[in-house]
Image (cartoon, rainbow, N blue to C red):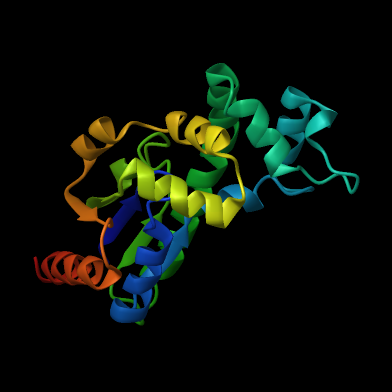
Length: 200
């Protein structure tokens, strides 16, 4: 079974696109960002390592990790962001490989789609047949993230700037999806990409 990676920075709309591939093409979706959230929960593999390195100030009253507090620390300090990635990426990659193995045993999916913002940084792109990158203008990304995450423009820009620049990311991509306009236009691009991917 073929495997595609779908990537793009915060606010590009890649998750909406991923769900389109699931609905329209019966793709098996592996949400790398969701896995990243799961592995830092109390009792999960990365939890103790993160508390050891970042301290108890990242914890909520229930002792779970407060992702907003952790984000405020790492998005303002590149070294701390690198440390976070060093801790979490091996656990994320391990879980993704486990899910790929599961999906390949099934006949009900047309292909496997890994959706994640950091597929290149975590070197997950090395394990896919194609990497698809979603492009959206900075203006549109800021607008979407304000509505979705209730962050200030300064916080949003800090988060976006902590991610791989588009000019670098697009060099890794086999296909580019422009998600600036109406979603019907985006869907047409997705159809062309999926049809080519599944027939070659």
